[in-house]
Length: 484
Ligand SMILES: [Zn+2]
Image (tube, rainbow, N blue to C red):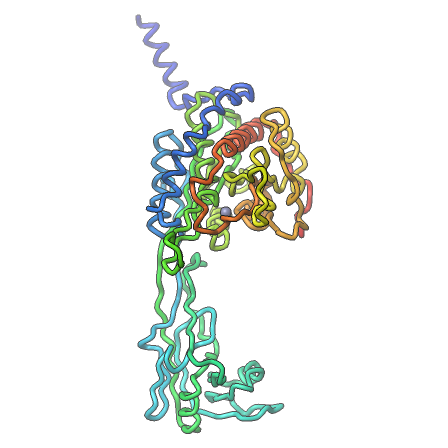
């Protein structure tokens, strides 16, 4: 009685805090476990992710947030370890944009007040607030030297090539006349971008302004009069997020290393001005297919009682369509120790296949039901490339097409999805991609056109590739130099 009690205590002390799912996962067991990944499950998830209700998952948008919540809800159900901010599945990314305030941005000279958008526009890609005041000076001819220091220069439409020289000569601002071909002025509005750090009040660069022909003429009649230019900006801040989770490995030492599997869960949103009845870019293939494949792969790892030696890191990236924002942010704000990711497996579009007899030239490079492009296997790590092809060769024997697996590929697919930001960080990658097709970035990229059998076969193969890399005795080294 006593003895048993003591033994029970000792057992708890020794094993009470270890992962109960810590037996190691062999390749053989994993091939059976791959059946967790199924076309039915993939279709189930994709029906939600690519639904019209999510409005095309633009970054940022409520539809994208709904997708993130759906992924996180499932991760929690499967017992995934959160690997985002503050013990959550979300890595928050602040987006911001600085735009000109239409009411406060003004040019005043004598009794003339000019308003932004109607009378003038500011030529800049980034706006900074500030004001300048000085006498107006009209320049009508090209010269070797401009005496414009401390002045606001009025410049005829044909003298646009002189702007740089005039700024260098110390002008406070340059107001150039619109030419006769531009009837209306268009003030560009910068879009949201990931914040680059704490806001710093940068000095205002010399304002370059285009004035309507009429406003320009009014100003030239006021030469030497003191003018005041005020640029006032507003800042919009919005949040978006990556979804990040871990399936812990079984080896006490190697579990500190990670095999990353990722996809982007955003798409390009909707456009109310589209001519037809369908206004929503559902992105079922791009990259709903990757999003739900990574979910189902995560489920296969998380719900198994056996785990590979290394840990698995699952990242669903936002903002890929805007310019790989989420993966760029993740790689500069890693939520696992630097150097601990041994490889990244990226899935972006694996749900479409070219049907026999399809002669549509837009589907020319779309892969067939048993084929998929693999990109990166010959470009960074010999060992990772060997694993990718060996797993496929002894498992489902998909037709792995290496057409784009080349840094000199004119389509530059290697540089066009999230894996690129991992590659830049020195992490060997492999990218699975079905090829461009008639519905690429069109409203017709819908669930009804997905080949779920193909998706299941590729997702199972990526899963087994992940298991194999995670069980490797030595992490795959990068032995090739990346370059275009
Ligand atoms: Zn994509």
